[in-house]
Image (tube, rainbow, N blue to C red; front, side):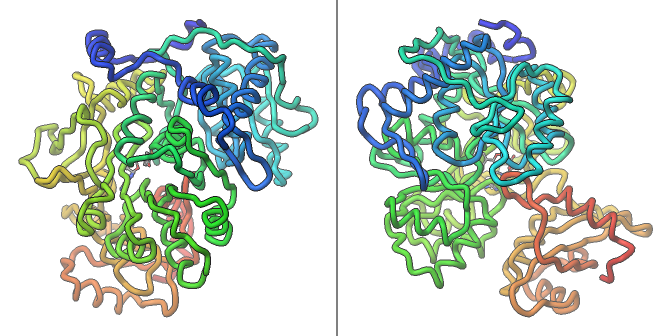
Length: 541
Ligand code: OOB
C-alpha cells in the first residue's frame, strides 16, 4: 500500500468503524468485487453496451484485468491516484474497473472539466497518471492535454483511449492477473465536489462506505437483476455512478447502456431498442425529454424508474414529468459528499412532486439548524447538517476548509436550506447563501424561481441578487422562454396573482436563449452573475 494515499484522509472514528463492521453495515470487500462476483456467477450475461460495443460480465472483467496488468507493468503502485476523465461509453466501465483492480485510486473528473480543474485535481491528489478517453473529435482537447502534461508536475504518465500522438494508448498487460490486496477502509475513489465557489474539492469514498452507498441505493430503488440502466449524465458523477446507477446495476447483474448523446432523439431510441428500465436526469434534461414525448413516437413503456435530481425540480415541472412518464418519477436529493434521499415509487403523487424524499439509510443522521447552529423547531427551515456511514468526515487535504465545513462532532454542513415534513420527507428550499438581501429583507431565490417556472412560457429561471446602491441588492431574474416572452410588467402581475410578496418581485429581467450550466447540467448561477456583472452596462432591463 502506498501510504501517501492516507495522508490528508479523515476516516470515521475508529469505534464507529468497528461498530459498522460488527453490524455488517460495512462488509470489508474491495469495490471491484461487486462486478467480479458476477463475472464468476453470470459470465455470459450482457454487462455493458453502447451503440458500437457490448461486453458480457466475463469479457468486462477480462478487459479490465488487461488494463490493470498494463498499468502495474508501467510501475504504478497500489494506492497511487489516477485522474480519470472518460466519456460515456463501454470503455468507461472497462477502464474504471481496470483502475480499481490494479489498486489505483481514480479521481472522477467529468468530460467538461478543462486543464484548470484537471491540473488542480492532479496536484491536490498527488496523482501519478492522467487517463482520458482522448480527443473525441474535438481538436482543442489535444492542446488542452498538452498543457496538462506541461503543468501537472506530479504526473508520470498520460494515457488515452485512442492513439493520440505524442501520448501513449492505455497500456495492456498479460492475461492471468491477480489483483493486489486492498484496505477496504482506504479511499477507493475520489468524487469531485459540485460546489459553486472556487475549484472543486476532493471527496474520498472508501470501499466500505461506497459499497454501502450502492447497496442502500439499490434497495431504496428496488433495483432488480434484469435492470437495464441508461447512463446519460456524465458517468463519473455520483448520481449516475453509484446512486444506484452504473455500479448498482452491475452489482445486481443488470446491464448498463452508455450514451454520449443525451438528446431525447437518441435516448428514446436506446430505451426502445434495449428495453431500458431506469435512468437518471437533472431537471433541465428531464424537461427536454418531457417536451419531446409529445412528438417522439418511440415505445418508452419499459422505463419504470426515471430519477430526477441534482438541483430543484419545480412542482410544475415535476407534474409535467409525471404526466409524460407515468409511475416512473423519483426525486433524488443527493450530494457527492454522501447523503442521498429518494422519494419512493409507492409514494403519493403529492409527495413525489413536492418533496425531495427521505434518506436512504436508517443510519443517516440529519439536523436542521438556524444561523447560530441551533436546532430549529421540527418542520422549520434551516441548514441541513448530516452524518452517517457513507457521508465523508473531511474533504481530502483540505484541513482549513474542513474546520468550517464540519461540526466538531463530525456533521457535514451541507449549505442546503431544507425543512423536514412530519412524514420524514425533505423539502429543499435552496442554498443557504442563495438569497437576495433587499434593504435588509432577506429571502430565498428558490421560492421566486418556483413561481416563475409555473408561468406557461418560462422554461428555465434563475433569480439572482443584483447589486444596488440604494438597497444593497435587488431581485434579478434570468429566464429562458418558449413562445411569447413576458415583459417585466406582465411577469410581476403574474407573480402578484400567485400571491408573491411585493418586495420579492423581480426588478430586473434578463431574457436569454439559454442559461450557463455546470459540467453535470445544473444551472450555474455563479456564471450568470459573472456574465451579468460584465454586461450590466449593455443590458436594457
Ligand atoms: C448531486 O451531487 P453534487 O455533489 O453534484 O451536488 C450536491 C448539491 C446538494 O448539496 C444540493 O445543493 C444540490 O446539489 N441538489 C439538489 C437536489 N439534488 C442535489 N437541490 C435541490 N433538489 C435536489 N433534488 O447533485 C447528486 C448526488 C447524488 C444523487 C443525486 C444528486
